[in-house]
Length: 173
Image (cartoon, rainbow, N blue to C red):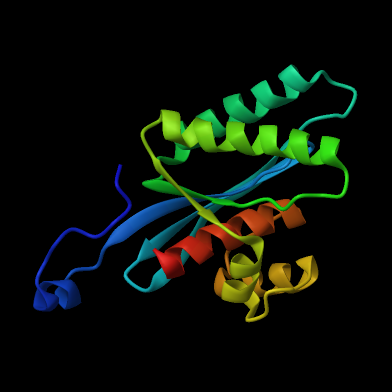
């Protein structure tokens, strides 16, 4: 599905409330956060969030497959209209960056396979959108998520970060 507004006249836009579900993804090999929000006009509503976990002792293929399977189930269950994912930065450890890139690739493919457009946002833009500063801490993100989405109950920073990515897309789409 295309994640844009249909062509209408300016008067039609003011009289119609658009609804759109957005899946936000915070990719990680050990923990991939996900969050779904609904945008109704300028209003944001919490739908669901969680974390896909894997263990370092598991084979890489098993871990990547779990991310793919669970994100595919999340897309089927919550039926988002589009997805947004946080861009990754390069670590000093090249192997860690490579593994994170593989997890991110799987996290992009799962919603794309379901026909969703997937949008990418730099971490600094996500933080600036949510907190107002591009170098905000995870605690600051979590606190702002509670303010912006009062019904949200993220059980981890990864789920809160995923909701932040979804909110970022809602503001910048």
